[in-house]
Image (cartoon, rainbow, N blue to C red; front, side):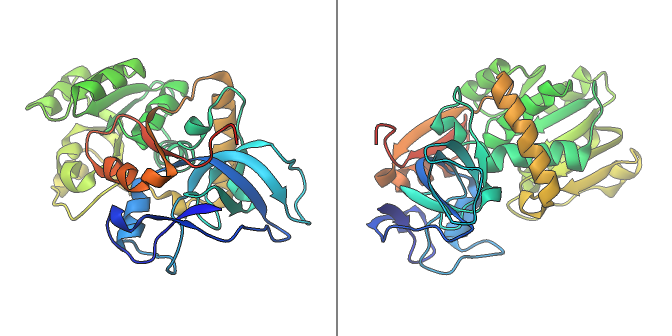
Length: 325
């Protein structure tokens, strides 16, 4: 089978397509034919060697994907060959034609959801749901600002927030991104490169501030987020690429909080509830991933380069096996 193999940590150039031995599931594992794999920022952090937990070299990257069950181990029940699934993690990496998974890493993919869309679900949608509902816990009718909303997590957060009856403020940094946020149904959209956009957010909130801020780039924005929080509100940090300086009094006068959210820390019971709710949203159409670009597996380097650029408008996906295979 074909798979992307990383033999040394580094830039996108270390993503090399190779022929590797076929995989066979163990007694408690499943073998999945991967039609599409989703790229996430964390993939790049791991590949570069700049992550807290690194795999043993060589390894195949990728946590997200979608495809069909190819085979199940002798102790696995409830799955059939050809069953459509999306993946939230794997044992062997999803940048490949096949991967090994545990049953907890496999979830039903409704027929109206494409494999490319299914590959966008794992980390982005679970991260958004965990940050929004399990770290912030807003009430119906409250306001949420998704700061940097055009990437996978931001898009998921808007859809989840609208589905939950929240009023959504969202920021983007390009004309295409602004248009995407409007199409997604954000109630108020702001250009975060425009001078004075923070004041626009306050004005649109009636000068009360927003109840929840989901922050995708805390090292740049956190200090400027705090004056936007409503009394008793919070910022949930989803992403950061460095240190940041803040004014603690901005928190004190608002009785506000800063919280972190990392999906790898979420309890298994919480994840199970998130995936169950996601299935409902995928089935009724209220959750629909946005695919930005699809690259063939041999173009993984170019896909990783695009994924790392600012100004995302959806997810970058690898086509691992043609659907006709």
